[in-house]
Amino acid sequence: MFWKNKIKPTITREILQDYLTYSGGKLPVCRAPFTSLYFFPDGQVGSCCLNKSFYTLGVYPENSINKIIKSKKRTEQQKYILANNLSNGCQICNENINSGNYSGVMATDYNKHEIGKNIKRIDFELSDFCNLDCLMCERDKKNKNSIYNDSFFEELKPYLKNLEATNFLGGEPFLIDIYYKIWDYLLIHNKNCNINIQSNGTVINDRIIELVSNEKVFISLSIDSVNKSSYEKIRKGADFDKMIKNFNVFNNIMKKKSHSMYVSVCPIAYNAAEIPEIVKFANESQCRIFFNRVVSPTELSLDNRSEGEYKQLLDNYYDQLNELSSNTEIEHYNKQTFGDFVKLIESLSKSAKESNNNILSKEKLKEILLNNTFYKRFPDKEMIILKCIESISDSLMISTLTYDDINSGNFEERYFALLKSSKTDDEIVKLFEKYFEIRKSKEKIS
Image (cartoon, rainbow, N blue to C red; front, top):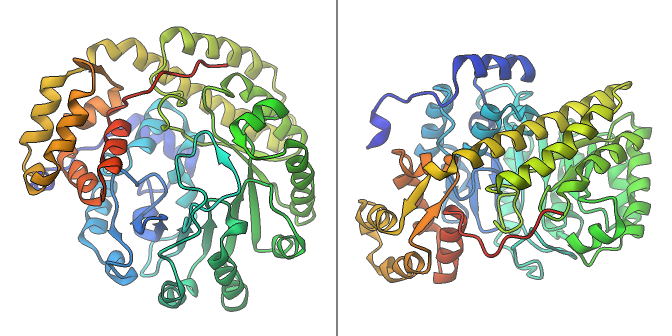
C-alpha cells in the first residue's frame, strides 16, 4: 500500500517556517488529528470540517466514539501530519499554506490544544435543519431527523467532561434540539469549556440571549453581504433588517464580555466584489472577520475562474486593501485577514494561467476510475460511474490541486472512501461532479 513508502512533505521548509512564524511556531503543523473530532450530519467523523469528501475516520453509529478515536485511519492521518504532508484529508489547508493565505488555514484554530490522552475539542454538525435556503448550501435543510439521539448523548458524556472547546454548526444551531442538551450539560459539568456557536443570526429569544450571555459562550454570525438585496439573494428566506437588529444584540453582548464577535463570510460569485465592504462593516462593528473556502456548488465557487475574472477581482481588492485603516488591533487583524484572502485569489489566478497543462482526457479518467484495485470491490457501481464519465466532455480542465491529487498515491484511497460512503446513485453523481470540478454553467462574478 502507498503508506509503506516514505511520506514526503507537501510544504517546503521555507514556507513551513514562514507559516509557523505566523501561527505561533508550534509543530505539528496541525493538531486536529491528535486532539479533535468533527461529527458530520450523516454520521461521518473526521478530525476537522475540511476532512469530509477527502478523509474520514469512521461512521457513527456503525463505529462507536471510542473505536473512532482508536482507529487506524486516525493514526494514519497523524503520521502524515508529523511528516508535514497535508495530502491525507488536508488538501485545502495545504493549498492555503502554500498560497500564503495563512488566515484561512483552519489548522491554526487547533494550536491552542496540547496533545495528550484526551480529546480536547469536538465540533458538532449534527443536523442540516435550517430556516434558510442559502445558495451555497446543497443540503436538505427541512429534514429534522438525525442519527444523533439520546444514545449518542449518553455515549458522548464522558468525553464532554474533558473538553477545552466545542463548536456548534448546522443547519442553524439554535434550531437543533440536541444542542441544548449538550450546552446544559457542559455549563454544569465542564464550566471551563468554551462553547462556540456559528449562527445565521436570524433566530433569537430570551433563552438564547441568556445562553450567549454566559462567559464561556461565544457566537459568530454568518454574513455574506452588507447589501440588503445581495444578502437576501444569497441567504434565501432571511430578512436583512431583522438580521442586523439581532447582530447588534449579539455584538453588544460579546462586547460586554470584552470579546470580539466573528463575522464569517462565504465568498462566492454573487458577493466577491463586495468583500471589501464586508471588511469595512466588520471594522465599524469592532468584529473580527473570517473567510470560508467555498468549493461547491462549483458554479458559485471562486475556484477555477478565468484569468480575466481574477484580474477584475484583484484590481478591486488591491485598491480597497490599500485604503483600509489599521489603527486598532481589530482593524489590523481584519486587514491582514483580507490580505491573506487576496493572496489566495492571486494563487488561484496563477493556477488559472497554468491550467492548460492540467487537462485530463475522458479515456484517461475512465482508465483511472475503472482499473484501480479499490474500484473492483464495487462492481455494482460500475454503470453509474460509466454514466458519469460519458456525460462529460472529451477532456476536463481541472485545478492543479485536483490534478496532482488524481496523480498521487492518495487518490485511490480517497476514491474508495467516496464509493463506500455513497448510498445512492444520486450521491455518487454529486460526489463525482464535486471531486472532478464538473460545473453547471458558471455564475458571473458580480
